[in-house]
Every structure is written in structure tokens, then in C-alpha cells.
Length: 186
Image 1 (cartoon, rainbow, N blue to C red):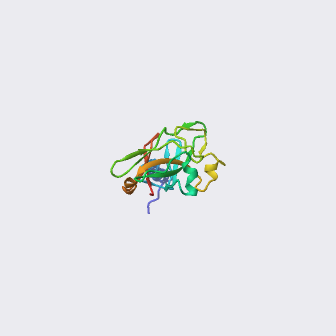
Image 2: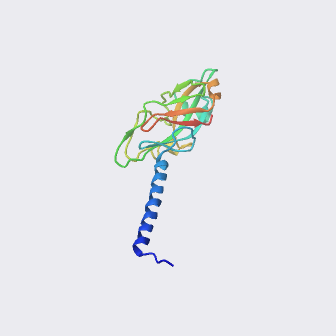
Image 3: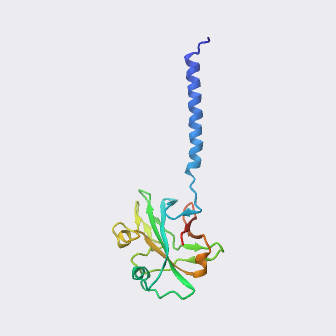
């Protein structure tokens, strides 16, 4: 039986270690890539230092007591249209830098029809273009929107009723490393 020298054993172990580390490094390259399309509600997506999480989407009715606070200053939707609330949380993961959220958001149907969010006076409304301080949150901790029933800020859209049936309806979020699309559960 041939005896293996310590130096040959050491070189073999080093080579095995290098191969193992290379495999982990290659696997990690793919692990850093985050899918930005077809995200579902409740699944966070990162665009640069901003983490977005669409929690809930639903039609809003101004004549419903629960919905009236989401539609402050708005009229009843025309018969062929519907108010849609998209409820979102945003977190700035940076410890050092403030970041601005997009000036507007869009939803798009499978037929390619696009709708841009509508400004809202509601205390639950997300204010596009806002700046998030380092480690800041939208909605702000302990604000009405954050402690409210959905615990998120609302983006408001006025859509044609037929468009809500052209699923999946996607929220488009612009930003660093974006855009990202979230499939809305309408």
C-alpha cells in the first residue's frame, strides 16, 4: 500500500476546498438576481434600496362607510368605471441615504391599457414623489395608515370596469434596478 505524503494530502484538500468555494460563489451570483416580474401581493420586491410590498388590492365604493375615508374629496365613480385601491408598504433599507419613491405609479391590463394613480386627500394615501429617510417607512410608523385596518398606504386608480377583468392587472413600479411588476388580485 502506497503511503500518501502530507503535502499531497494537503494539496488535495486545498483543491477540494477551492472547488467547493467556487461552486458556492457561482451559486451566489444567481441568488443575488431577484425576479422583478410577476411578483404576487404580499411578496416584497427590492428596487435599489427601496423595498416595496403590495399587501392588498380592492375596488372601493364611496357609499360604503368603510371605504369613504379612502375616497375623501372624490365623487362616486361613473357607471362604467370603478375606484381601485392598491395598498402598499415601502421601506428604505439604506442606513445612510434617503431615497425618493416614483412620482407616479401605473397599472396595466393584459390588453395593454394603462392607468396612472390619482392624487388623493385621504389620510391613507401614499404620496408619490415622497422622500424616505434612511431606514424610513411608508406608511410612517404609528400613522393612521400604518395602524389602520390594512396597515399600508393607498394608491388610488380610476379604471374602466372592463379593464379590471383583463387579468392579470399589474402594478408597474419604476425605480433603480426596475421596473418591477406586481400582479394585482382584483
